[in-house]
Each structure stands twice: as structure tokens, then as C-alpha cells.
Length: 116
Image 1: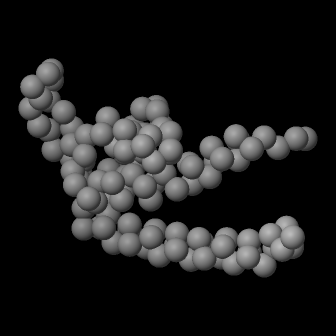
Image 2 (image 1 turned 180 degrees about the vertical axis):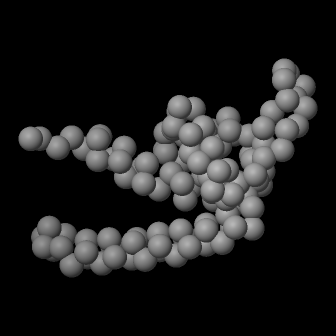
């Protein structure tokens, strides 16, 4: 069975998506389209079909909340903000990310492949 690099890259992106979405919303309340655009700018390509279930799951876990705001160009929009519990959860995710990042960098630095 041949591994495809694109499949692996997609799985890696999905793995950090929750961290990235919470980080974006922690900076300021956000509308889903704005979140998608920020993720695309960071090369974490996401479609609405991926984001909305994640936002709902984070809301159900009480990590996010939302408010409805009037829109100049259509119906009211749902803007998400992080809760106190979400902020604590995000801090834990960031710690885990830093530990993981360090471990991956260490393994790469010790790899024979890099010592050519």
C-alpha cells in the first residue's frame, strides 16, 4: 500500500485544526467565513463542511459561545467567542503543541537522514 503525501498532510492539518480555530477566536470574536479565510491564509485549507461541525462540537463542549449580530448584507450572522473554559482548554492545547513540536524537532535533529 502506497502512502500518499497529500493524505498525510491533510490528516496533520485536521489534527491541529481545533488548536488553530480556538486561537483565531481567542484573538477576537469571529464569523465562520472570517475563520475560514484566516485558515486559508495560513495554508490550513478548510471548507465549511469541516468548520461548522467543529464549531458546533466546541460550542456543545462549552469552549465557545456565540452571539447573533445584524448584517448589512443579509440575515443576522453568528459570531463566535471563546469562553473561560475554552481559554483554559486552549492553553492546554498550546502546551501540548509546544511539547509535540519540540519532540518532532528533536527527532528530526537526531535523524540520520538530516546528517548527510
